[in-house]
Length: 224
Image 1 (tube, helix red, strand yellow):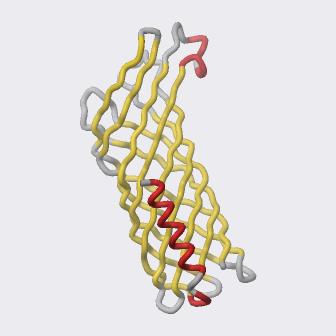
Image 2 (tube, rainbow, N blue to C red):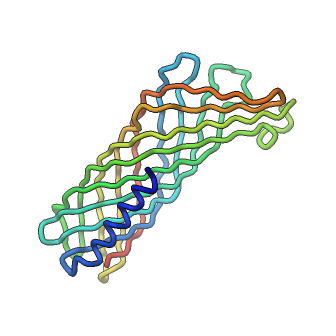
Image 3 (cartoon, rainbow, N blue to C red):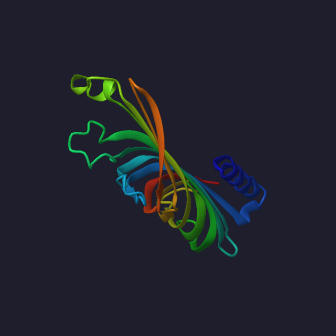
């Protein structure tokens, strides 16, 4: 799905190049501000997958037809994230897992404000939310670990969302500042768990009923 969404984004940008002066493009580079996410588990044997914060790079494309305000938007977030899943056991040494998160979204909407200085648009978007976590006791708490133990946790979820984007061009024609906020729902999915220790490996799964995800970002953009 990630390749399909990136391909659609490329087609959006390519179409904008041939739309003439009536079509404006904004390429954005910014910071995904820290927010959390909880994927609520349906299985009693597992705690909810609680990601305390996610933050990283935010890359985006926005195209708008200046004559009527029709607009398209694509977002790619690459984030560092942490999670906590083994909170039932107070003696557990595997309570905080570092990992990475990727959010990819594309959509269309309308920009009621669009001029040389200000742009504001809102969108309906579809995409995916992918996270993967890795933990090795030898790397994080070597003095407390009697044996090597590795745990991996990962999932991929469908992510419908709504987005609002504001762009301000203080001077000139190209350099701009932007702020954007996306609110979506990481849909029910399968969470995969893999364990490795001295006795071998084990794989299990649980079902998540999903969780609400907020994705705010600020940064700079280039208009052409």
